[in-house]
Amino acid sequence: MLATERSRPEAPIRNTLTLVFGLPYRAGVIYQHPLAFLLGLEGIALLRAFAGDHGREFVDARLAEVRALLEAGSELGDGATVGPITTVDGYREWAQLYDQQANQLIDLEQPAVREILDGLTPGTALDAACGTGRHASYLASLGHDVIGVDTSAQMLAKAAAKVREGRFVLADLHDLPLPDDHVDLVVCALALTHVPDLEPVLAEFVRVLRPGGHLVISDSRGLLADLGLPLVQTVDGDFGYMPTWSRHTSDYLQAALPLGLVVRRCEEPRRPYPLVDDNDERSVDADPPLAHVPGSPPNIWALHRWCTDAANAAYRGVPAAIIWHFQLAAS
Ligand SMILES: C[S@@+](CC[C@H](N)C(=O)[O-])C[C@H]1O[C@@H](n2cnc3c(N)ncnc32)[C@H](O)[C@@H]1O
Image 1: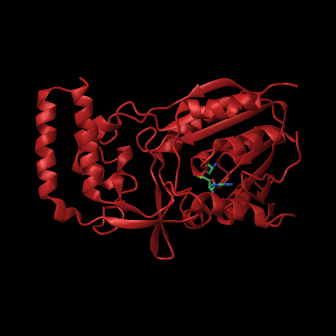
Image 2 (image 1 turned 180 degrees about the horizontal axis):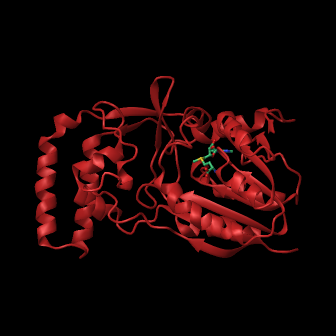
Image 3 (image 1 turned 120 degrees about the vertical axis):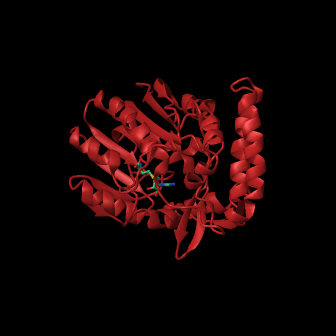
């Protein structure tokens, strides 16, 4: 069932716009230059060598590659200036492809989340920012009564089609359309990166959770841990990016612990190594197989192949996600 009307239909969207556009930080126009991205990877690789991870041969190869990249600059094209878009606009476009695209982040996140969910007693479960219903459908298969909320009508429609027995509502994480103490479990997957401040959202989860209830969170860790990756989308034929926030582990704890949430488990799955394998066409990095188009926002996954060794060194051991299992203290 898909419920797109609520008693307070304006609140969610107004909140999203205010939060995204009301902040000077990461809410302005950004400039993405393909050469800047590649030289940045070389720089991280060189810093790792400087710290002792690699020897002289590696450093010499990087310096030679930097010179070659600088000479190849015109082949890569100019940078692109990209303005912010709301998650509502971004996911309206992404909804059509979301379930079809290869997604390394989901490959890393899903087993860890499912392992936690498998250990919980079925009850009433909220999938907060449910998207196309990836976790909602799994929760339903485990015997939970599922409620899903999301601010994207298009993502929500996919979820409703996938989980016929669920109840899906267009709503914002900051303003859940549920009474206090209503659910046994809240799952919020890969969405908190879109909210600039964790505390009000976690407080809203705690409000709807029954005492003793469970909160399972997964969140992306950005491109390189706390270095966030703006998600660039094509919207109405133009480009825009959805701002993201990447956090330190302590940021989650500082928001969660004062609310009475107790940590049951925490995982930070690492990106595979090597991330880019030139000899393997099925390397995770081969998807999406789009080329970088000069003048467009850089397709970073395609660009990695310009500096495979630097990319692999830069991403080595870097967590792609963080997964939390919290439990609300019984009152
Ligand atoms: C990367 S998708 C994840 C979807 C799903 N949870 C999953 O893991 O497959 C992020 C989702 O968060 C939703 N979202 C972002 N900000 C939101 C907010 N403030 N309130 C509700 N949903 C939001 C988006 O519309 C999108 O569907």
